[in-house]
Image 1 (spheres, rainbow, N blue to C red):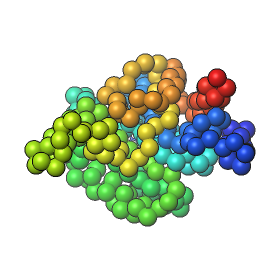
Image 2 (image 1 turned 180 degrees about the vertical axis):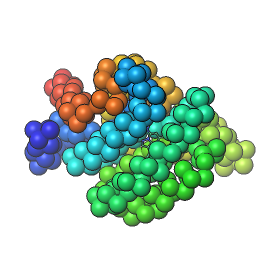
Image 3 (image 1 turned 120 degrees about the horizontal axis):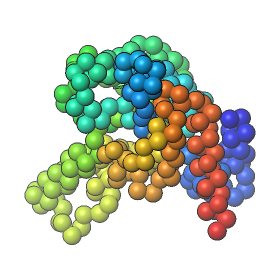
Amino acid sequence: MLEIFSKWKANLTSADVPDQAEEGELPQHIAIIMDGNGRWAKKKGLPRIAGHREGMKVVTKIVRTASNIGIEVLTLYAFSTENWKRPKKEVDYLLGLPERYLSAELPKLIENNVQVRLIGTTENLPDHTLRAVEKAIKDTKHNTGMILNFALNYGSRFEMLEAMKSVGRKIESGELKADFITEEHIQTHLMTSKLKDPDLLIRTSGEIRLSNFMLWQLAYSEFWFTDVLWPDFKEQDFMEAIAVYQKRKRRYGGV
Ligand code: V07
């Protein structure tokens, strides 16, 4: 971990500093699909919610690591629009996790200058969940450190559909002509409009798919998959993903 960090620092002062997260630089925005919590629990003969509880502890660790090494944006896929199909008991437990996490971690997030943000639709979320998250957003609004972006009740097709509706309304009102729609018009109507696209996507638990996560934003990102289940995911795994990203960038940089 130290090595990667020092390489990153060394890079910042080197003569040929690339514009963005290029050769050997840290990825500025990392997105993670935190998969395998249920499977972890099953393997141990525990209820699925035990896996989610353990998964939350890993969130705590990885958020601290990411912030410490200077990651600018960390987006975590916490709850998808498809997750509503799970048993009610599991859904209720999952939607209690933002409060649990924030009641333990919000003071530390503030201390570490982290900004909490949300992507996803607040519709259908229980009041208690929403209140906890909105308080965290409000209390960290003026922080200038890492952006910790939770994807909660998020689905990428829904996000794109809403963006298309907004652009459609501009056409209806005569403000925009269809032929003049650009990628920027779409992008500015996405929930991530103010964020740079992820440089690196991490997915745990051996599944090699996107599951309706940031389909537009991941168009040019590096992907790193691991068989490690999210509750077993360690700081070393996170640093390995970053090291692989840096190696790939160096390789492309040399061509
Ligand atoms: C959830 C723990 C991590 C593994 C994946 C599923 C279970 C942290 C949050 C959270 C969300 C918003 C927020 C603060 C914390 C969370 C859900 C599930 C629904 F503002 N972990 N975590 N939310 N899991």
